[in-house]
Length: 156
Image 1 (cartoon, rainbow, N blue to C red):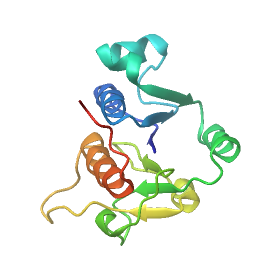
Image 2 (image 1 turned 120 degrees about the vertical axis):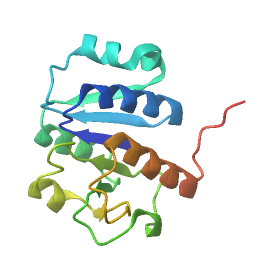
Image 3 (image 1 turned 180 degrees about the vertical axis):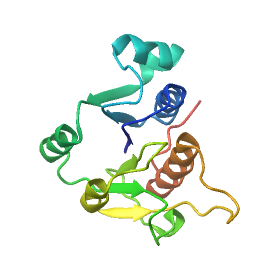
């Protein structure tokens, strides 16, 4: 299982994403450009002491990510989490090789990304709320996907 941040805007969220990936033993992909300077030093600083156990990959564009997927994981499905969906994530049947994709904090994902996704899901929230933080959303989605696929890491 992998999760992907599409052009993240907030560096603190990247740090949380790296820690989440490390703790759940899932790979994290970052599709650039980001809304902040991103280099290996920035990733190491954001990861704090989780950097050594996190599998983080960078793709310098959407096209590079699509090329990587086609050559590395062609059987995977890209599952986009978006407010522009009619399907709740808890009703979806996840598979162990799914790629869970989350859009920008400020703008979500563009139409091109929506069209590319194999499925588009949303997380139900209160009608009075605008959205859930992207990393909180990723935590919820990954938790459900890992539960369904029985691939939770085991802590002794």
